[in-house]
Length: 218
Image 1: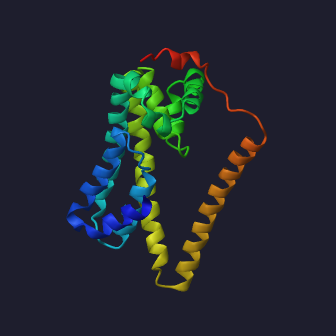
Image 2: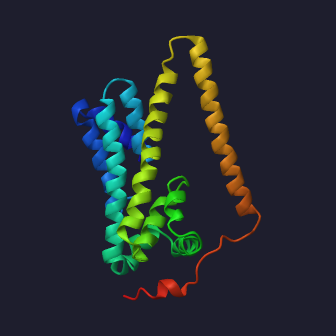
Image 3: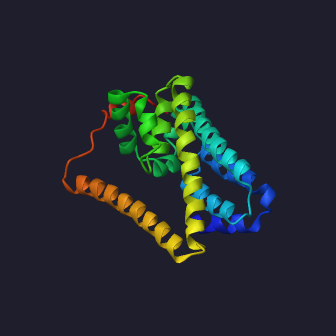
């Protein structure tokens, strides 16, 4: 998927680039599992090469993520019962993960929306459960609008920074950028090790009772 997106960006006219970014992110709003990072980070790299304008691409990244999330929330709120029993949906989001997200909602409320923006692979499941719970629209939309002000520019800058690091003009600049990249990689690996050690400990992730899902009958 990531290679396909990179090829797509290389084929398009620079003036249409931001619209492509927006369109790809919007696809996640109809249930297509496109991670925002594999779209926005390559877009940032292309911006660094001067092949796409910065401000329009940044706006496209922000509004693409926001509109995609809001659209999927509305779909789950209105048609959640129908899509919940579809085979493709069960492959896409396992019921166990939904119960885990429901437990977090019961414990932390709307703060789960904030946390899901910064935890990999939890965004779509969280939005789905929020829609099935019929969370008030503005209670979902407000943290989404605020958090995306952080995540979308950060991912675009990450792509720009990677591209700039690869074409550094001096060895000192290259070393500084590579050290920064190493620090980021170490932080990611450390977070992954914490997560994997938790799984290896044998402690099961708490989840809500299965009776909650049984409420959604065909």
